[in-house]
Image 1 (cartoon, helix red, strand yellow):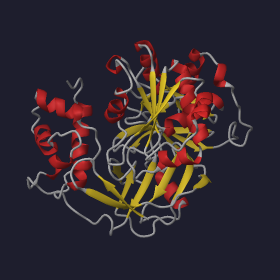
Image 2 (cartoon, rainbow, N blue to C red):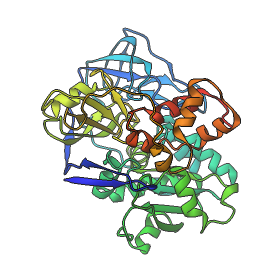
Image 3 (cartoon, rainbow, N blue to C red):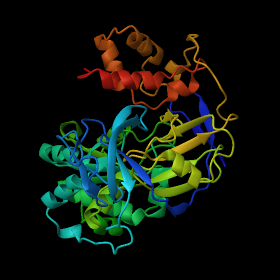
Image 4 (spheres, rainbow, N blue to C red):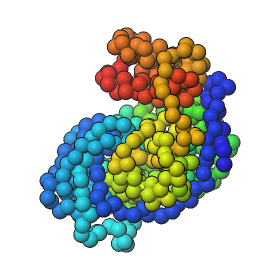
Length: 434
């Protein structure tokens, strides 16, 4: 089915093929898992195991080094072969623990624990979330617990969960909520309990709320104030700034508070960590695109090479033109089939030559389309020009901070300049953007 995505500004839109997806079950276990030590923005975790050492399924293999770091656990039982530098899904290179599958499983196939979190102390929920390595993948992947503690210390905490995809071509968050809304909302509820949230906002993309009735929501969220708001239908919708503006009209003194924004993937990770006592070892992955044999949604062990996932999904239908991770609009193209699945991986999109023909980046023709389509009204090409000549003026830094990384500018650029990637890299490179 072909879907049109209308941009928030200008009359521009794109069309993409949205497959009818169904959960295919667990992916095959990797014979060798490549587990990155950095699966979030911030500092990498420090290894606590050595080559030649045997590890259990779910065992801590790298410890977070501070508030901007996160614990890493072994997704499979086996032997640590080596620590190797490899390409990662975000386009960077990073250190991975190479684990050869061996031994028995202690979690897979066993009866799941069901911890009654409803009356657990807030400190205990926070401890478990931190211990199990839960990150927040709402926008940039970041450790969840420091965000929760900051929100609680600011007073009158607020939690907002976006129930749809920030990049509609990704499709994962929408699928998870539509197919298991009870678990997703319960995961959000236990996060709300961990900070004693005063208000919970449920941000949806429909014309009206079609989820649980108010009485049921009151039961799930333990009688907290629950507000449903519509996120909008044009792209981009549902990022931090947009949701902040949505809830500002009903939330006094919002500027003095530290709202926490999450989505279904984060809620599901929290649920598995607290209710089932599972560290983050798996991710649901949407595998689709015209260059793929069989579109699918698979539950994949972290560290599984993307080549294994593609092979399990019927392999390449034709020679791929591009493999894009985490959505066609704001995602990243990768070229190595050994690139591993990480905590922040949500989708693989396999493009063929018809949908992604060969092209080369050309010089800017000053058409102004990137300026017209930018939802935050910056001039992307002017920003990129400043970045290229290293002239980081206060105005340029303000534009870097304002950019939402939505990718609209790059999508409409006739010269195929990767504008948003250049801007994103510059924003991450320059510390303390004003």
